[in-house]
Every structure is written in structure tokens, then in C-alpha cells.
Length: 286
Image 1 (cartoon, rainbow, N blue to C red):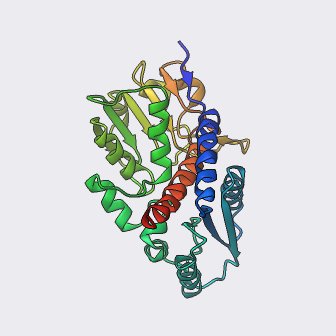
Image 2 (image 1 turned 45 degrees about the vertical axis):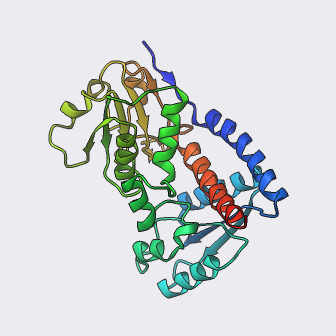
């Protein structure tokens, strides 16, 4: 048996066609959705991520603003830029690319972004909304994972979902989203004792811990759906995930590749949140 591949690029393309139509409708109503992306420093990986986000905006007709600052920027200077964007009516979403230089507190930066423009879904108000099942912006990576499960028609009700990873960006919000879909959820991490015993119980396994090839074929229940959020480099410098793709695809029923899996969907959900932010401005005018 070889698993079906959940192609994030293809799925993203279908979503973005729809989003392009939404942009046109908003523009016809006098609002061009706008996303501001802030990059501090010259981290090569961050530069690639930011470039891809800006290109995605342009592809569907959105307005994008990329602001790049020197790594020596102070926290006060960055907070000043965010405050300016908070009051800019042409900007509906603000994203600060992480990681930030050590002199800047990422939580202070995230909380400075207006909750109405928090299209990354990291603000405490957004996290609280997800926790309570209220309306808000969901973090883009786990939301993208959920859309990938939807794309294969997977019903999570009563299933055991195991999330390996406990970050505020992926692990914790992923668990909450799975709970909302009536899955029974276990959260594991790098310190979990006998990880294999838990992953073998998973009907759905989400790997998001940042350790390359941590999940091997002998850790996966036959027929499980495996979502690989990891973004690592192998010894040859090639991108790879937290899952040993070649081995696990012989056991799983569905699997996401790295690259070309969760990554494109993360950016697509960022576009979705920005469109929702712009739509909320339009709705408030009527």
C-alpha cells in the first residue's frame, strides 16, 4: 500500500482562484484588501517566506506592503511602525515575520498588532476566540491542516488525533481545532515518554515538533492520515519534514509531502484571513 498524497500546492491553487473572485468583489465595493508584512533582519528563510507571501497577494489582486528593517532595529521602533499600520485604512492585515532579533520581545510585538488586523491569529484575543469557539482569526498553519483534512472528506468525529508539538503557533491551536471537530485529542511533544505508544493510536497524526524524520513507519498506525508540518533540512541541505516520508507513505492512507504540503496552505489561509478582515470593514459600512 502506498498513501495518497495530499497536494498542498494543488489545493492552494483551487482556493486562490476563489479568493481572486472575492478580491474583485471587494474592489468593486471600494475596498482593496491590503496586507503589510514586516521583516526585521536578513534571515534567509524568513526572506523566502516573506517573498512568497507578497507574491501570493499579488497573484490574487490584493495590495501588499513589504517593510524590511535592519536587524539592529529597537523594539520601540518596531512598535511605532505597527501603530502606524494599525491606523492605516489601506492595510487590513499585519504580519510580523518570526523569529525576531533577540532585543525584541515577540509577545510584545504580537500584542501590539490590532486584534482586527491580526491575520496571523497569534494575538491573545484571537487565541481566546479559538479557545471559546468564538469568531476570530485562526492561526494559518493549523487552519491549513484542517482544510487538507476537509479536502479528502475526512470526518474527525470520534477519531483519535495525536498532535506532536505544543507551540502556540501550531500544536496548541491545532489541538483546539481538532476538538471542535469532535476528535479525541492527545498532545505530545519532545519530552513525551514512549511517544511511539501514543502515535500508534492515532487515526490522524499531526507532526509539528521541528525534529527531522522523528516519525518513522513503525510509529504509524496502518491507514492513518499523516499531516507533516515540519520544515527541516537533511544532510544534503534539502527540505524535509518531521516525518520519514518514504517509509511512512507505505503505512499511511494519506500523507502530506514536504515541501509542497502544509506550506502553501499556510500562506493561503493568511490570504483568507486578510480577505475576512477586509470584508469586516465593508460589512461595518452597511
